[in-house]
Image 1 (spheres, rainbow, N blue to C red):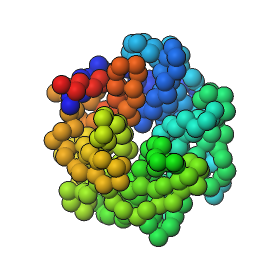
Image 2: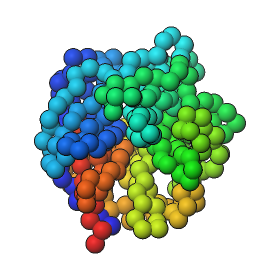
Image 3: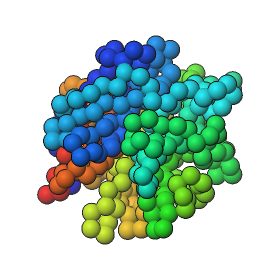
Length: 310
């Protein structure tokens, strides 16, 4: 399988009142006549909040509407999301839209801490309300340091959520960097989650991190694309910068990694030439689209690619 890039769709160059840069973690929700793409943008102080744009369903490069205000606000003092919110995934459940997100809080001994939260929309994804002040996948024996970047799917009679669990902080060139592996949790209702403690994508080495999986079923096989990076020289498009990984599974639990089959990589030049990351996959009619970020963790904007199976 190969992904055919369709180009850059949107770059945040100050279109929003408060949110000055970035379009990190584009997350699509398909409507009859449009695709709403949620993402996180950054304030002048670099803290993130989520918003969205609407694009044409037949031509995603055509922007129909830009929502200028955040759809969620910072948590109150002392909560897990008091310093930022990054979009994770969208899940439709009954007549509601579940938005899973990563909350950010600043720390003293390490730069920050992430945990996963949930907000729910009862007006078809227009507005959202957090279910409570706490995370839905909090610290436990499997996730003692942090959880982030959730992707929730329907599974059997319930739900499965893949997410990155921070396993350690390491000092690299006098700077602390976190290392995180992909794991999963199960739920019967999409709200109460039970982490399983199994790493599903083995890292190439113990300093490699994997995050933000996107899953697509074709026939009896599940396909996963995800972002992976090293811990050295990854921030500015260096040798450790994010690339797309790939794995496949028959049961959504046991995955075989084979990055050579990802079918998409950085471009020779332009907005996604130094980094490619944070995929989200959606079916639109007969097409399968991947929304993703490029250079500088989404500062260069987000684009779209079309799956070609032959």
